[in-house]
Image 1 (cartoon, rainbow over the protein chains, first blue to last red):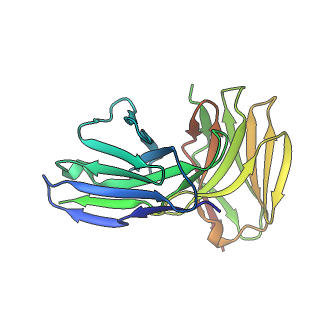
Image 2 (cartoon, rainbow over the protein chains, first blue to last red; image 1 turned 135 degrees about the vertical axis):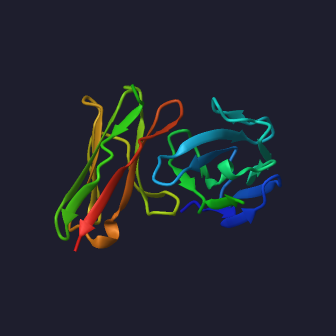
Amino acid sequence: GAVVSQHPSRVICKSGTSVKIECRSLDFQATTMFWYRQFPKKSLMLMATSNEGSKATYEQGVEKDKFLINHASLTLSTLTVTSAHPEDSSFYICSAARGTVNSPLHFGNGTRLTVT
Amino acid sequence: QKEVEQNSGPLSVPEGAIASLNCTYSDRGSQSFFWYRQYSGKSPELIMSIYSNGDKEDGRFTAQLNKASQYVSLLIRDSQPSDSATYLCAVTGNQFYFGTGTSLTVIP
């Protein structure tokens, strides 16, 4: 099946620093990848849609200057949390679909970010 | 109205019983329907896909789709403690929509 790899799985950083999270599709090309955020015991929240070769589309309320997304190739999208603060601590998950819009999403293993 | 609605639970069933999880959606044009399982602290994992009306079985799991009623369900037979997780219903229309998930606990 389709495999999406996400790295790192866990990161602890100090307030004010930036953190980059990578998402790779290992066995298929993904023109679109999706970034989600999830707080403990809460539902998935779509943050942005990452489009290969063009700007990401951000959901309402998500700061594009804080959550920088780069989708430079068909297999790699990155999310950079800039000037991180404790309230950015969360579980970040990327996903991608192989094929058409009706194909299932496959998720990376997620990144647990803790900002101290 | 939310695009996809699920009862948040928690749903508790004894080991060996059938767990029934339900989901309704609002967009009649939706074409693809998925069930994901999410263990605590982990990312969602695809367990079932269904595209046409009726039942689809895969091992202990059966997905049921009724497009006329805009209803999709997941049955888990012979529930095991390892099935304890949150189950997310997902529907595609012009984009991917997730329900908020139903928490299932299987009691040994």
